[in-house]
Amino acid sequence: MGMKLNLKQVAEMFDRSMGTAEKWLANGMPVEVQGSRGKAHVFDSMEVIRWWFKEQLPDGGVEGSKDSEIISKRRKMAADAELAEIKLNKEKGLLVDIADIEDVVSHEYKLLRANLLKLPGSMSARLAEEFNDPSAASEINAILVDEISAALSELQADKKYAKEQKTIKKRTPKIPSGKFKTTNKTKSG
Image (cartoon, rainbow, N blue to C red; front, top):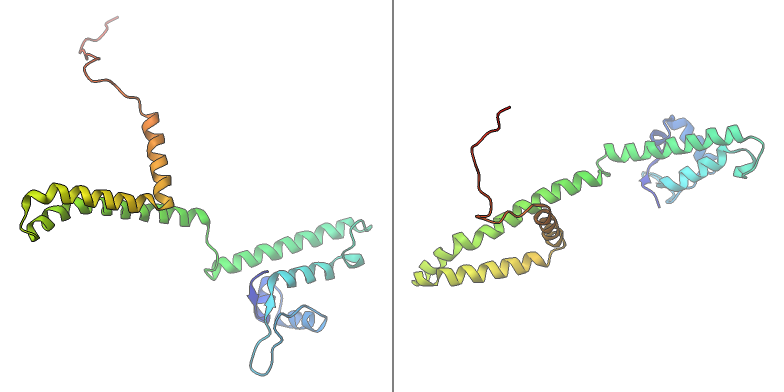
């Protein structure tokens, strides 16, 4: 199932005039919803592309016909039409690259995570003060850390984040403290 288009959008998708699109309609281009007074026809882009492809092929689209060069050209035209549809949808803002979304969501998630994990430090003293029990600040802090961490661990993104952090820690060599002495001697040739 493709995008829902009106006749003008069909013409634009194929880089053709409205007159050509109207001829196609008269020649049997599939209509998903028949238009009426004041209401435009609605077309399914994938059905239109399929119809157009069959109309352009010799022998009604039967494979193995003698006109393989024509078939190749028609396939290229169909692929170009599909790319035009994708381009049109990108221009309309209906399609975006997944990588762009992943980058934005990942960045926003890291900011949200960092800010949520800061809350216990700033809130525990305030809450202890509010309840007139300054000694409870560390207990409140621990409770808030546990609750926020538990909520974050339920999120799929946090599981991925935790996995990434483990991988980073595994790659980072551990240097035991006190086992290595540094010297300022330099070799001279």
